[in-house]
Length: 213
Image 1 (cartoon, one colour):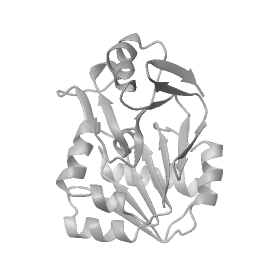
Image 2 (tube, rainbow, N blue to C red):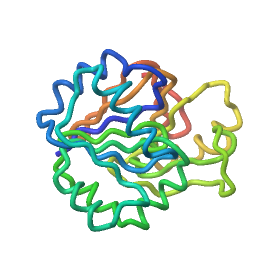
Image 3 (cartoon, one colour):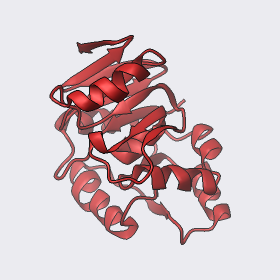
Image 4 (cartoon, rainbow, N blue to C red):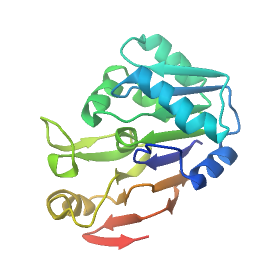
C-alpha cells in the first residue's frame, strides 16, 4: 500500500523532515510519474532541480502526464511507477483532467511506494476538495468537488484561522460530513495505512470544531 503525502507548495527546498521521511519511504527509485500541473515542463524541471535531486532523491526515469500524453502511455507509466507526484496548478482543471484521462483507478490501484500531492494535487488526492474564491482560487466554478479518494478526508493547504469566510461558509459545514486536515505554509501530513501524522502547523476540523494537532 502506498504512503501518501499532502502539502502546499514549497518555493525552495523540501522541508528537512519531509526529505528524511521520503528517503526512508521510497524504496525503489526506478521511475517517478508527475501528473499534470499548470506548466508541465517547467514543473518537471522545478521538481527535479529544486525539490528532489538536491534532497538526494534521484530516479532512473522521469515521466510527465499531460495533454500531450496518450491515455495508453499514461496508464502504462502509472502501472510501473515507483513514485507518483500530483503537481499544483488549477485545482478544478486538474480534477477534470484526472477524470477525462481515466487516471483515477490507475492511481488508486498503484503499487508505487509513495504518492505525493502538492497544492492542487494534494487537494485532488483527498475524498473531497473545496475550491472557492475565499480560499484564494481563481475559478468560475465554486463549490465542493469529489477527489481521488485516496484517503477519507478533505485537505486544505495554506490554511489560516483568520479566514473567517472560508471557515464559516465552507469548512465548518463540510466538517459535519468528513474530517478536514488543514495545513499552514511549510507544513504537511503523511498517511500510512490510515494513520495520519502531521508535521508543522496543522489543524483538524471535525464536527464543527477546530483543533490544532
